[in-house]
Length: 448
Image (cartoon, rainbow, N blue to C red; front, side):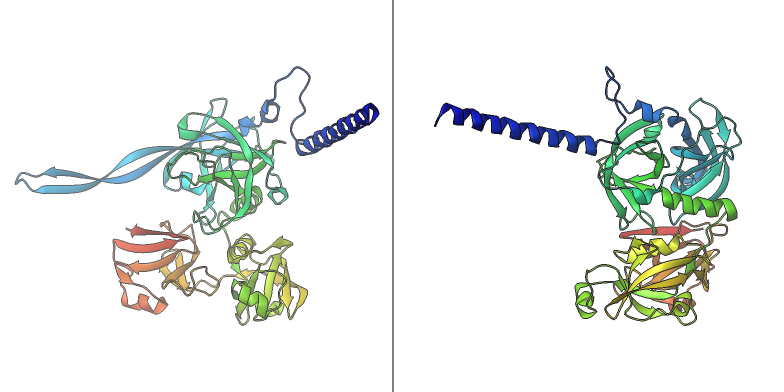
């Protein structure tokens, strides 16, 4: 091989390396385009993003009453148990979403049993919080403080999030005080976690621990994209799988709580089940996604919209419907009377249908503010579990921890397979013990 040929080959190799290096540089520049630009001589930092934003995340101190049993020997040497109560302190986090009105959003589970809620700002001012409303079904609660010079976080459009986007979590883990961690969006639309019954979680690997509940998940522009809610961990500490309620859900629920103090949920009037491969083949569907209508309730909004059995719903207001829980979540966030657009496959054609949410007809009241019904075909446990499902909860009347979608299997150790079984049970007796299935978790719930 001649010397000229060797030089030529070396030159081509160097050129290829240079072009590849430039391409890699451009690719990296594209990937990290949203990271704050570093000034010459400065160390990499998210501090510029956090300036002013941290003041909008508050610490929440909760005082509640908890029952316990004291047991001692009486004068005859017999055990004498006695129920009593004591104050219990707990801590969480919250986010100021309206500085002028002093509105603070947090998780419902942070304050659900509270006798008193105290909010501490970053400048160490403390305020007793006023309770404005809550929604146990989404685990959102709204508080108000009478304070000046507050900082708020703007709510971003969480529908614009992508897997891989950088995020920052701010909260009060273990009551230590404000703590900041970072990570990425690991997944979107997590809805079969079993934490609450209306789920559409952002999953993140940003470290979230006990006490972070109700804290902020923000993007790298400092906007609120979620409320940190729960972790999946065998140890109880962060394992890199955390869940946050998306900001669009926070916005929808908060607006109703501000206006009404409660959530008015409606119904569309269909029963449905997930699309399976068999359904997809039978109905000649392009994908195994969406839900297939199995029943249209006469006189309902679905009936008036012209929905038919075997219609396949694939989108609501342009948002993809992958499974039954997706549709439950989308409808649950719509107000009574609100119109929405459906993308439907019918007889091999894609059509558009306009629906309307109608007020849910509450019928069978199990407890004050708690209504039940037979399990509909649209419920994930239909055909596999026998019981009655909680169809509506009026949080202004209900003193229980029951949520819409919970399945009640037993009352005082008597099996409940259908509504008619309730006729043989004394629903006024106290205490009452319920066996409840929520998601995949079974638990017993005392009613006093």
